[in-house]
Figure 1 (cartoon, rainbow, N blue to C red):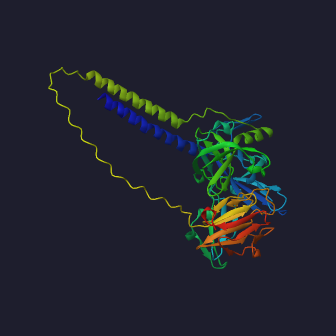
Figure 2: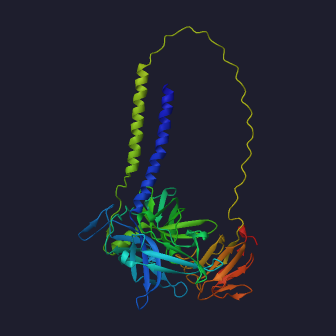
Figure 3: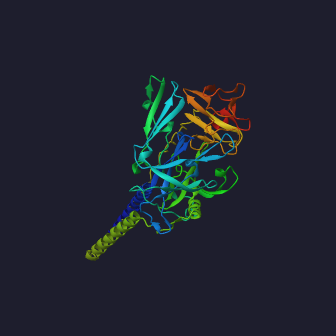
Length: 482
C-alpha cells in the first residue's frame, strides 16, 4: 500500500509541474501584450503630403523624470521601439536616413487600411493606404541611436490598458537555452493572406486585397522560442561597430520590429530587430541595456530589476504542496489503522520455473521525412556581402537593403543596391526575375540590364547581379548543385 501511494504522489507531482509551467508561459505572453503598441511613421513632402509610411511595434516602460513616476504595470506614455521603425534609409545612395515627420501609436482596429495590387500573373504592382490619424495618438521622438537601432517615443496621451513592462537591466540576465517570447504586431505582406482572398478590379485590370490593421491588444502575436546565444555582432552597423545581441529561434516578422523580447521570468531582455534568412533563419534582438542608456541620456530613468515574481508560478507551487500534504496525511492515516497480521506456519511453495521472454519482433525504421522545399530552386550569393548564403525560392523573394520590405536583406555597406531592388518569384515551376525600379539596375548575364517591373524567366545556372558584379547571385538547385 505504501509503495502504491508513494508512486501516486510522484505521478501527481509530475503532472502538476508541467501544468504550472504552462500557466507561467500563458501569463508571460498575455502580460507582455498589454504593454505592446503598434507604431506608425509618416514621411512628408514640403506640402505636408505623405510620400512614404511604415509600421512597426513598440512597448511601454516604467520611468522617473522629475516629479513624475510610472511603475511597472501602470498605464504609461513612454515607449521603446527600433530606430529603423521611425527612419527611412537611403540605401541606394549615401546611406543616410530621414527621420519621420510624424510618429503615431495605433490603439484601435479602425485607424489604418492597406490595399495591395497584383497583375494578372499575381505579381506585386504596388499599394495604397488610408490612415485615420485622428484615431491615433501622436508621439514625439525623445531620442534614438543608430548603432544599437533603438528609439524612445513619448506619447501625447495614454491609452487605458497599455501598461509599462518589467525590464531586465541587460540581456546578461538570460542564458542560452532559456525560453523567450517575441511579441509584436504582424506585418502586412503577401505572406499573410491566401491567393483565394484576392478580388478583381475590372476598371484597373488588377487583383487587389484590402487589410485593416488591428492595433488592439488582441491583435498582438506572441512567438515562443529559445535563446541560441548572447554575444556581439556588427550586423546592424554595416559591420563597423559591435553591438550586443540575442540570437533566438522565435520568429521576428517585419511588423514585429521594435517589439519586446520577453524572458521566461517575465522581464524584457531585448528589442526584436532583425531576421537573416538562409536555408535556415536566425533572428536577433538588441540588448535592452542600450535603450536604458538612451533614456538616461535624455533625462528619463527607466525602472528595472523588479522582483519578477510570477503569480501563476506561485499558484502552481502552492497547489503542488497542498496535494502532497493531503496525500501524506492519507498515507499516515492508513498506515496507523492497518494491523499487523499474526504470523502463521505456511508451507513453502517452490518458485515457478521462469518463462523465457519472447523474442521481440524488429520494428522497421520510419520512412525519412521529405523536405517540403526540396522541389524548389535556390538563389545563392556567389560574390558580395551574402557570399555563400543560399535561399529557397518558394514564392516571392524581394531583395534589397530595407529590412522592412525584403525577404533577402543586403547589408548596408553593399554599394549600388536599392532599398527594394528586385524580386524572384516561383510560378508553376518557373522562376521569374524582376527589377523593382532600382537606381543602379538588375543585370542578367548574357541579357544585360533588365527593364523595370518586367519579369524575366530564369533557370538553374543563370547568374545575375545587383548594381555591379560585386553583388552576384546564381540560380541553383538544393545543395548548390546546377
